[in-house]
Length: 433
Image 1 (tube, rainbow, N blue to C red):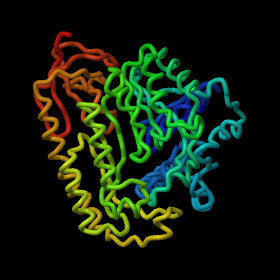
Image 2 (cartoon, rainbow, N blue to C red; image 1 turned 90 degrees about the vertical axis):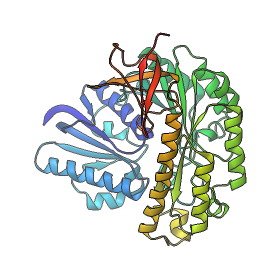
Image 3 (cartoon, rainbow, N blue to C red; image 1 turned 30 degrees about the vertical axis):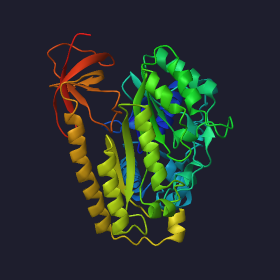
């Protein structure tokens, strides 16, 4: 155990990661040595930032807490604190079942941890972070909470109503990060497209995107977690015309059957979904669409699932993820529906979707062979430099494996000719600009 050292472990989404990075900055300002997701926990203090979205994520969080709790019992750490989404939902239950945890903090009161340790929260550093990503990119959280009422989703139970950050605060954070060398920004929120409606009484994401793309040294901006209902179409000309706004959007659609969209309370129809996607692709040629789909929601019939299969075959998403329905306590589905799809059927449907998508992804990647693409290099490995195009978000999308015949610098952009492709990745070599 190393005295005056804090290890922070982050589970779940990139929104959680931003919270951890802010907490790391506060600990550092109070004189602690800090580490994020260390290979071996050895800090005097350990903080686990949990995810509570679905059952699998909750189980992963509990396993991690128990593992660190065992380290505490063995005297390898001194104090264990748990924060984030899981205690936001289940604080009382966790306090009763996990006595090895010194204290629990929810999604938004983690600042109290510093006070409980006898330390100060530095308000002047509220927008500063210790980046845990490579130095050239960062996640930029523009809002908290969610005002949607999807049947299956527990996130509003944890995060509360939508709260947009002020544009001035976001711009200040971007200026600070570009001074540190950040060139690529992943805009994140539970629902990007709702941005501004609470604070400015209008859908203000297009205005924010214009403002950020005008700022010096902002090389790429990528949009994550859009919602199909109330989509701000003013976004599309900006994406089409501004070279530093990536032709990429992550828009979770969940399903296509009208029956399922209604049961899921998505406030959109099959017909409106097709119209939305057609307009996006028409107005932003070459855009790469990422979506997330759900199988096994209560009431999903073979006909509903068949419509979903036909949908992904027709639309051919460049990027797609899928997951099985989880019956989450407190949600509309938990109260109003029976979890009536057997687990084996859910998994079979998931495997079917992902099998189809693998083939689509392989064909889309193959279409890039021979093309020259702008690539940012993330890191160097034994055989290749590893990079991404504007169509690829960190961690979740394909990578570009670049030959090491010429020395390249992580964090810099290069023109890469794609020589080979497979299901998941592209292979290429740099060419002169």
